[in-house]
Image (cartoon, rainbow, N blue to C red; front, side, top):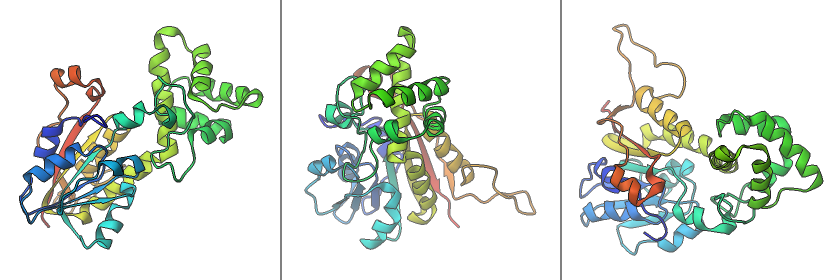
Length: 300
């Protein structure tokens, strides 16, 4: 729990309707809170496969013969499940948020609260860093990520000022980025705008939207008929994708209807949208924006 306090722990695991002899996947292992709760419901024949691209999470691995931890991005879930001999599974859980550990490590650069290098990579062994994004992207690219991933009305202002500022002093630390933004944004809105900027850059660095789309598109072939998915998101970009995929099996447009007006989609939602209680939010403030959606794989 010191690594990450899992959000909606009971609700997310209950949504999977765990069968004691089933095969389940936790694609966002982190501190292992959700995984341990799933293992508690599995019998000796059950199996849990977990994914995490952050090397720090590997230190939380669980010593259990029923458990396998794969150090990979969940966008490759289908490939690695099949490599390990699992064609289909009974359920999959995803907690799409950044872990408390990642936020609280100053040198990771995820938080506006600490001074550290502009990194923000969930897998520090590959990919571009936040420093490269803010210092190497052109103005149109910065404008796009601030508008699309941060949903910022000030996208033009921010992009232009970053371009002009980095010519004089490259932006290498969170403090330098924070100070630049503070000069542009009124004090009352400063924290909210900073959080949106960091979100936008982090999404770009980790290609989070593309990774989520890749995972969702694999689910119809990964999940057995009658199996469940339990998906938790923390901002509207992710939640819209999850909601539309559960409803339509696609991200844009509407599914085709047959001659009788019926549509064929891979999943049906189970219950209503679940959000944390006031009590949970009071205990864990990072739970306040969580949205949990549960769905079941339809039988062919």
